[in-house]
Image (cartoon, rainbow, N blue to C red):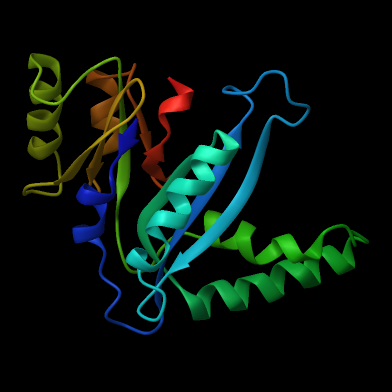
Length: 199
């Protein structure tokens, strides 16, 4: 079981009423090859000042256990205003293109894809590695040596096959020259919870 609530909850900052974090519970085809759909979103949550994480913590864990699903959170805060404006734009585009299927998905889709204007929270995917290993230390030191100057490591989040480094922005082109095998995701979620049944 992976339970990263104790790592992630202290990082959340929703003092502004416009702020929220996007959480999704996803049943992945990779975990359930017998099911017809590749990936299925079971539930989405919008963690905000009025809807804090502790309100949903037990429910998220229960749904993950029941559906054999994983919970993910994007650590770059979203803006309710920006998501609302872009959801309306998305719906208008769909109307213009004659796409009338499942318009209710627009809000969740925009919440997941819209880049944050408030935070940088990149995910460096350290598969098959662990925090504190020689390679992990070398990667962290190299990231911190890149432009812009300063400490860029925000957190180390365990995953099923290694861990995610959550970082501030850095020069990805220079990073890729030295570590072409490591993926850097600029608008991706990290793991919040994975039930024991998926191991």
